Image 1 (cartoon, rainbow, N blue to C red):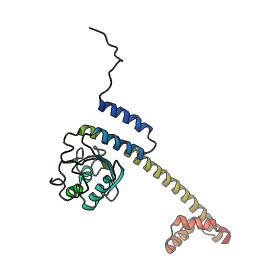
Image 2 (image 1 turned 45 degrees about the vertical axis):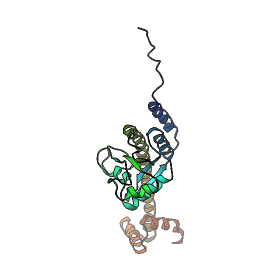
Image 3 (image 1 turned 90 degrees about the vertical axis):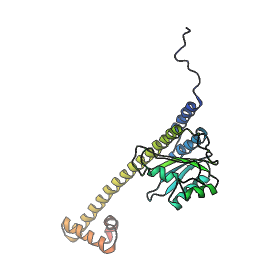
Image 4 (image 1 turned 135 degrees about the horizontal axis):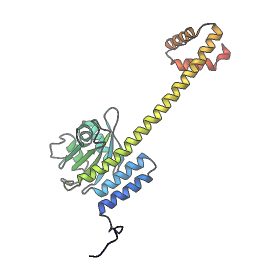
Length: 246
């Protein structure tokens, strides 16, 4: 039996090659927007029957935004879901489990009786959506959406591939949210320290000029804040900036 070098492997299957290529592209992506755009483009190539791919993210009020789409119709499809409060992207972010939603016949199916016919009017006949962060309890942060312009056009789609691609998008979005929260916390902490310092300075000025103790100086600042309906830190900052006029 011939001996083969274990390091010599044949070319990977097309799907594996696509995922390897996508991983390399995601590492080079400078922003989360670039990551989502590249995931949408890869999904269009990988998922059989896909004509339009988009990524939807839920806003705080529960409506959908569309940061990435391979076709402008993807934005319109999300707008219709917001208007009708119905559709695969909303379902994928709301339902338990993997958050998978599918309709092979939008015009005549029963899955989305309001949104389905409206989507068919803009040229989409079947739809599939996978929730982002499937381990997260609903409502999720959004969904990866695949549309076909043919009735039953996604019947042969590889749903496992769609799940893997949604996982890539989930990692990118979750990382961005974590970074945003971290930056927000740093900003809030810095602001809190700055406010505490300026309030301390204003109290010192009042104690010196009016001959009051720290507690009374703080009461004066708080009273001015309430009377003028201006934040306490802003009152203190104005006082420190105009101390020479007192």
